[in-house]
Length: 106
Image (cartoon, rainbow, N blue to C red; front, side, top):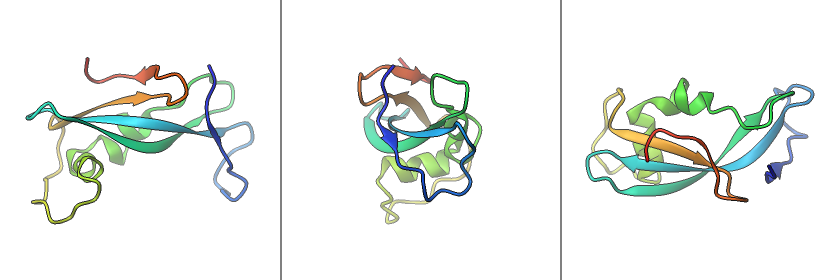
């Protein structure tokens, strides 16, 4: 697979062999079924061939409160969303070839 690699020379937290790549988060509002694109980045850890989805599956981006911010493009005029899961689903896509490497919805 080919990825758009991001310059990480100024990121002191990156480990040797890890690379950052561009990805697109396809975020779906599970109530309306509307899907919006959110450009983002993920890390391919040394020895791996695909980016880790952990920030989206287990980290801060797995919570509905944060997913709504990405979905609404940080429009804080919207009503606050409480923490939880199930309101939004995410698929992570390689923008080079449109392959989904992490899927929460069809």
